[in-house]
Amino acid sequence: MRRRTNEKGNAYIEFVLVASLFFVPLILGMVTVGIAVLRNFQVNQVTRDVAHMMAKGVDFSQQTNQNMVANDLASGLSLSANSGNVTGGSTGNGVLVLSVFESLPSSCNCANGGHIVVVDRIVIGNNTLYSSPFGAPSFNASSGQVTNYSTDTKARADNVANVITLSADGLAYMAEGSFAFRDLGVTGFIAKLGAFNRSVF
Image 1 (cartoon, rainbow, N blue to C red):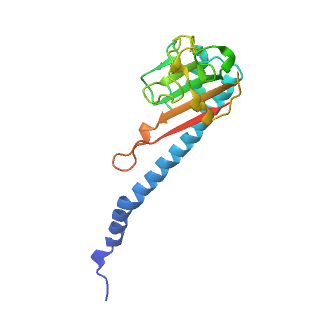
Image 2: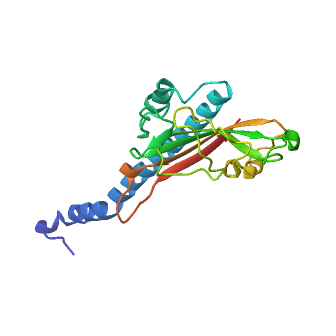
Image 3: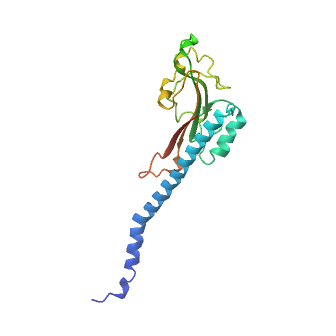
């Protein structure tokens, strides 16, 4: 049976329809997930670098060090640097919670003797995105120091022992990063993309 000459373009039209309904969303989805994976690697590296720098003595209560993290290490992740505080803000798509923990010996004769406590906490970025499950003490808004960590029961963070083993008087430096990739979401297909990582030294 011979094909009519006016039907020659039908195959092209069918291919375009199939491509637009199947291949284009597939390719866009692959690109979106690929970018999210790359950002996930970056989040892992940021938390590791910051925790390592804390262990080496870098003071992230200083605005210049917070700016370095937001502008250089977390470039492209929409992490907003603080404006001279250590409690964070409410803008941006990411947050870093930096904590220093100490295992107080039972011989300290204090309310938190024998417990792991938070001695420093600094929040960089959007503090509405994530709260650390390791203690919830009040801390100095300019330095991040928990002044009454030996008596404040809210400073207790014994569950840190599930992450790292601390001997009496031992210290641990932890960086927790939570980031939302809001610019990558596709309504109805891919929603709430993001990454979380925790690094301890």
